[in-house]
Picture (cartoon, rainbow, N blue to C red):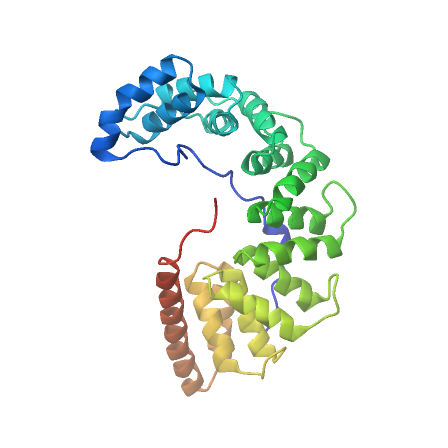
Length: 312
């Protein structure tokens, strides 16, 4: 009954990054209101930084009524003067239809301008659009090019997506070694998807010697973040005694947790195992262990809320 679920192909690209209104140093509350007229005056006189700040105020409703159209208007003025962060924000507005009609071609244009000047988030979004064929013909080679540039600037989502593309052979022949390299870098940022994929690769010996202990290590890290697929696979490792001592109670407990987190196959496995497990004390113990695991996950989640966001 115990079997490891291999679903590497399901890991699609991470959604586009939103950095709208990222105006460091913008005044708040009363100070914002007092300063709006000065910022507007400077913006109307052509100051690109002031135009960018005013756009952020309209986007966030700081000192003015929230107005995406006005945000796009002022970001466009700043973007046309070559301000990279305004180019990125304007690209995002077009990609998502905020304040302007959705237009992937325009989004691509502004992302290109920001990406070519080294903006890592624009490089990531550009890679995503080439991967998905948004506003341009799908081009995996271009996607890899831009993801790599963002990944080299330590954008974890780019590292994850780059690993996916190498693993799946998108744009070139599959390359497990490159996939492993980029998954490791994304996992260093705590990305559960990368941790899970590393677990699968060690589990199956893809690009590395098969190592069940290492697979369990990575499954456990992803499972601790509430990642249902990793919870399912961790449960199967306990059930089969791979990389850990065989333990039906612990295995069944992780299957329960995975099922409660929405994994349909885990839900089915749970039902089948319930029929097979004739020892009521095992089922009872597993239910109790599952509650303990859920409590542990909840504590870790709450603890993580206290940590500063490491993403720019």
